Length: 157
Image (cartoon, rainbow, N blue to C red):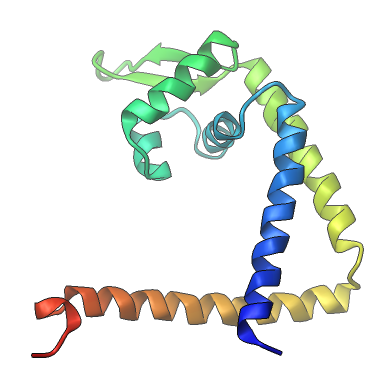
């Protein structure tokens, strides 16, 4: 089988999964990017705008737009940092926590339906294959970074 065809199937699976999840998330009344923020806060606890932006690799102003919408919808609150009044801590409200819980249930439902096509043994085998592919990709990324950091951008004169 062609490598390109296998990669296309992996990427298509990811795109189709994302479509289903985003449709379900939209039914909860929030945008997918806002959902990512809520999930981040659930995993990491109260955070600052700058720490969220750094973790998500976007600008603080991009995060600010989503935070403002989430605050307006009562999904989050900003609390003054007790150690430093210059910072606000972003925390989930009860409404935000309810959306996170519901979305986890939606993920479990969608993922359960998807993986019902495989036996436990097949899932274990697939997991092993994916681990090997991820390791190969991480190795490629490291090699690429090393080449970029060489004098002359990795090119020989």
